[in-house]
Length: 180
Picture 1: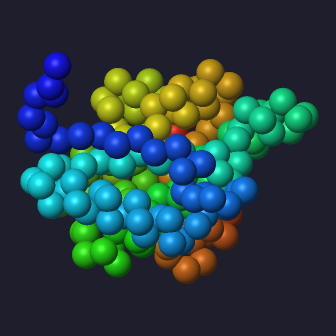
Picture 2: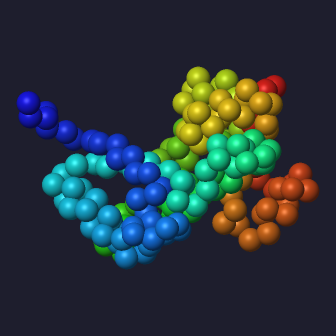
């Protein structure tokens, strides 16, 4: 049976694939090869969305099984996925493929890069994030935080000094909690 023609695809890559033949980490040469594969598929007219895991760097479940606090282990796993996304973004950009890894300074009711009238939430509850599909982060990660009462603070790390400001309760951010 042949596949129907596709216009858009979601390509899920495990973090392990970014290791190439290495035992861990990111192999830049192999990531560049993957980028060329994605570019070739894109050049056929496909619209491609990439989702990349973080298992080449850290697995939250494994950390929790080894005695780490589950929330901390999951945060580390989430950061690993961002690192991998940035590595793939770099390789794709170098291959001439325009990309974006969404980075914003909070949670918005729509994509602020596409809608100049998007409204940023100061606070929002987990259920609104999930029900309205606000795409601040992976839905299962939001649900995990909700189920464990872990607040989420969304802010831009790209702005110099912003982490310290946010940690002091200043700066531009959105706090996702159980109460709105």
